[in-house]
Length: 511
Ligand SMILES: Nc1nc2c(ncn2[C@@H]2O[C@H](COP(=O)(O)OP(=O)(O)OP(=O)(O)O)[C@@H](O)[C@H]2O)c(=O)[nH]1
Image (cartoon, rainbow, N blue to C red; front, side, top):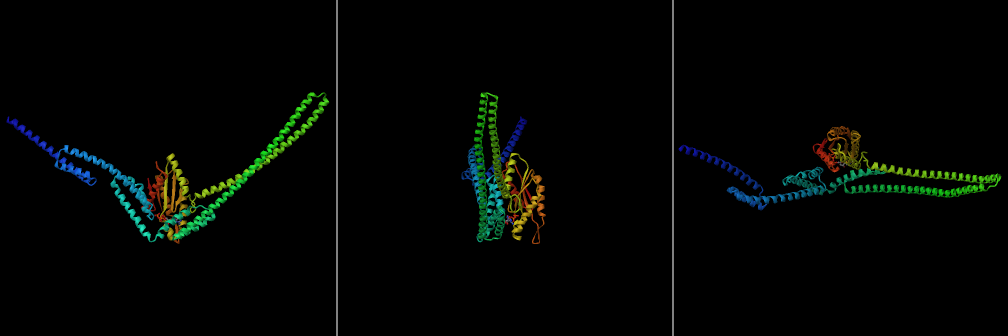
């Protein structure tokens, strides 16, 4: 009996110890969870007063170790408030997105922002802002934006004293770009060259304004000359058309009157044959028949001779009229093809950059859109490269605008010579060039592009007896599914920006 009781005691003791171990493990887990929940609830503090109150109550209850039946309604309340909070957060995030975007766009329009800042800002608005996942992610963006505002404010403040000097270079560049785009007749080229020199040397607004007026007057003169020449072409075209018209009218009148004459002659011949027929029926003797036939045949043969003469005359007249009409049509065609040639020449000139003789931006845009269209119809490898001469401003500043112009011409020639026949290189504006490489993937383009960079670097430039090394930076990308012309160009431009920012004289790639 006592043996049995000992065994039961032992079992009971073991059961109590096991139960205590389970309870202490459970207590430890509940404490850890309570601790975590308290910490988490504290991290939400300040979002919403109602939520704060509920969470405080929840923390208290947890600390007191109350049962789940008391915690459960509290948890439901908290979950409901948190759900509302989530919707509120999403709305806030949306508002934040549009206000950051608006602030950035406004800043982009600000004058006097340094180029680097403008590029970073564009990157922020085009890329960084789209990668934001939560409100917290906005904090570094907002910091950056505030920095940009500082820059803008600083350049505005520092320029307010010398407003004229700060505005002029920007306007001068714009005016210079416009002057570069002008494609005019030979005699105006010299005038434009002089105006361009004046723009480079000008250091005040008044001179720039004068240069702008001069450009306008050259353009107006060219337009009125063009209009006069078009008018005189139309007048002479009209004259030739009138002559042609009157030739055709007189030919048709002549044919009509000839037709009447032929009709009457034919009728006469017909009548005579009919008469001869009747007479032969009623002839009484061979001799009288012979005499009758002789007479009628004589008269008929005169009519046939007359008909033949009439036909010859008609033929000659027609040949003369046709010759005349042909001549007039020939002259019309001559005038038209001359005008067409002139228009073609003008179109060719308008797509050519007058300084470097490379295709200009308009020509590039046309080709670029075409290549993008082909790519969208049937995808193939097309590499796009934006090339920019490094520190080009310093060439102008140190050696003058003419030296700058010659540099651009030499670089353009070297670029043209170094690319494949199937590539398309154009001057995009200023010291920027663009290159399209159809049929070449980015990975295959990298090596020839780097070779191109070295070709320019190795050109032995010499100004005022000084040897100068000029380098270029390149940004390249490849057309991708879903690209628009702007998207692909932005990618290449971003790569160029990277090349500029990481030391220049290099090729950067944006995949
Ligand atoms: N000679 C000459 N200069 C030009 C022509 N078009 C633009 N420019 C000049 O090119 C210069 C471009 O300067 P920036 O945009 O500051 O660039 P950069 O000096 O090349 O510097 P990075 O691009 O940053 O390496 C400006 O000074 C323009 O006046 C042109 O047809 N002829």
